[in-house]
Length: 110
Image (tube, one colour):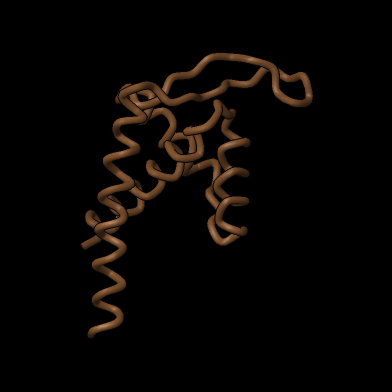
C-alpha cells in the first residue's frame, strides 16, 4: 500500500509543479509560493520534496532549466515546461479529473 500512496503523492506533486509552470517560468521558491497561493494556503510543499521532483521532471524531459536573476537580483535556476511537459500536463489533468471524480463518487455513495 505504501508504494501506491507514494506514487499518488509523487504524481500529485508532479502535476502541481507542471501546472505551476504552465504560464511562466519560475524558480524553485516561486513554484512553492505559486502552489501555496493557488491552493489558498491548503497545500504547502517543502523544498525537500520539491527539488527531487524538479530534478526528476527535468531528467524525464518534461521541464528544462536555465539561470537568470531573481526579483532580488540573485542568480537563480528557473524552470519552464517543454512541449513534452505540456502534453504530459494535459494527460495528467485528464487522469486526475477522472480519479477525483471516482473518489467523490465513492465518498457520496458508500
